[in-house]
Image (cartoon, rainbow, N blue to C red; front, side):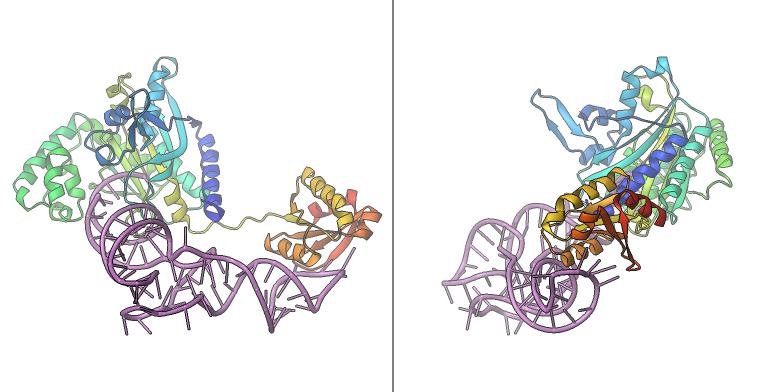
Length: 399
RNA sequence: GUGGAUGUAGCUCAGCUGGUUAGAGCGCCGCUCUGUGGAAGCGGAGGUCGCGGGUUCAAAUCUCGUCAUCCACCCCA
């Protein structure tokens, strides 16, 4: 990845870091390689990620390891192993890093890709859910992504979800034989996904039993929506089901574009994950953003207005002088390129043009003798001789 | 992981049913123009035809495999 694509990723990371700071979210650097078991236990055995998309291998010590397919398990492990529960249970973390999933690649879907993620740990309040979502919105805004939609839903908790799950299985079982192959398989494992199926999903959109949230979950979801109202447009989509096992209550997805890979960021609450991994009963909510997808959604990065100087030397006897001018400009904080002294003046000017420099600084025998430099404005073609100690100041003034 | 399309010069592509030294445009380098870029003219460099095997007297062209990119599915960020 190079050129504009690399610049876009860097800009996205910079925008994210700026907004994370604003929200008091601190960086956490998590391992690239973990015990495979970690993902099996946390991401979940029913997920495709664990069932068929992990890059796993045995190391020299006969440990079964895996390249991380997502970041949340690493964050959860860090939280538990560093005893945050005791010392400071309320934490907001972000991470930036590459993830790995063995899938067939296409635009916006790579086997190695970058995720930027945020996790709010230890806060059960709807305010945490709403902050997580608005944090994501603010990053999109800071980066410049505009054309996206936000979908939210509530999956309920350990009390109300099993009831719904069973109701759904009962309802769908009667038409089991007519379901597509994958849905027959999904029926027992994760019946919510059947409603999400592109082949069969629409058939049950009307008749399927609706999620019946328990009063606590209902109130939680309503509060989240109240907090979001007026701050971000969103759509409640009851068919929104996340592919990871650990989600509870609020789930959300930011979508952009009309291609298949339209989820640019997604997340939700996972109140039982920390506990199920052997930690304390710590609620949490978080999300992950696909960096490459988000850059794709941006389109092109607005060109940065940077003033750049290109230094050229006319003859061999001036090279050292020109070289020093170049280094002095950099010392003065001016973006400077040059040093292509083997080429003739024309060739060096051509290179100056190609690097999109605003100015050329031309050094010849006269300038070297006089202790000056010619400053040429490449947009207007005007040029003027400056004493060396006035050069940097002159460039900054024209800015 | 399934189905499909594509892969020829730095880039965009042309090369019909297998047949001499594989082409174009743009870009690049040089010269016209040895103190000045963007224009024009002229000249030049650059290609394991994605990679590997097979068929054939002969393969960029046919075939099998493989890798990569893209599309749909699947899945997901």
